[in-house]
Length: 461
Image (tube, rainbow, N blue to C red; front, side):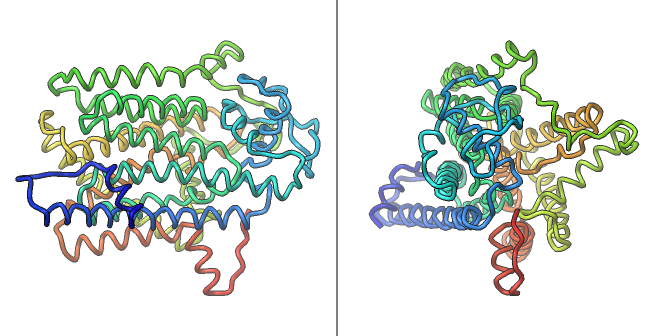
């Protein structure tokens, strides 16, 4: 309980009206303690799924795990900040030596240097894999903690925060990737830093908020280009939504700090432009992904977009392919999300008098709207990228919903705010329960629980 009180002291207190007396402060302390308890439960939900993944999914998983561990080994043997991607190779099955096979990963090196510090190449392969998987679980959990902390600052209502926390940890791929060797887990930490920084920035935070957000941008750029791009879209959208406001020198200074620190995140992309003439090194030797022109399906852009969205649905659950109950659940969730986000957007633009934005409620609305715009923009770019890959290689595997963990905290916030706009009572309760149920059936935790109940063995991969 002392730990809860110590953590509660770090959180901002939402005051309204008079200062109040001892009973008011006691009520605030109870509310903060309850939020911390909810956050702990949400974190345990994530950790339980990631631990199951780390223990049960055979190595290497289908999410490039051998490629990531091979990159770690490369950095252990020849530590270098800017590796030549075209020279990197894949480890053999025993992890004892490199094979002639090329490694197609093209991410910046810091994550792999961090894992190389933790890894012990002399240890048995099983031990190495377990230790690195647990290290990745820690990274993803730190990111979740930061997102939950941001939720506490943005949502003063206990019920709203509980709903946000539940939605946040029910992103299906979060616990799967969280238990594997994958640089997306450092991306989750970068996402958490950006979410906290943005929350503080739009609640009137100064240079400290700018530093947090800038660190998140820098880490995103040194982890994965897609993370940097998505966060960039969020920042641009949040500022566009504030264009009509009176100028706030304090906020502009904070944005300057964020930009100065975040600029470091563009160094890997600049290096790639200098070295390879493009923002990312592209390995063209993936024979299994290349389809001869004569064998490719006849698709135009619209056909491809529909197929892309269909694949996103099939790949949505933690364990693929999606079962009928998960598809029905996702369809229901998507319909609910579209409806409630429309409600939220309508409410947002009703009070778009820019001067009404500051404050906890306004900041939450603005951040939710910015993430919503980022999702739309990112999806459009993702579909267009997939179309180009199809034209060049005939590859139709670009649709990957797991990349969207970057914008999921903002979506969780938007869904929460929209549901809270529904009248209190049965409608809000039923809407929340149905949405959570639709999300839950796609999680690894639900899959493990239902398999235990039915005695059906899981087939993780």
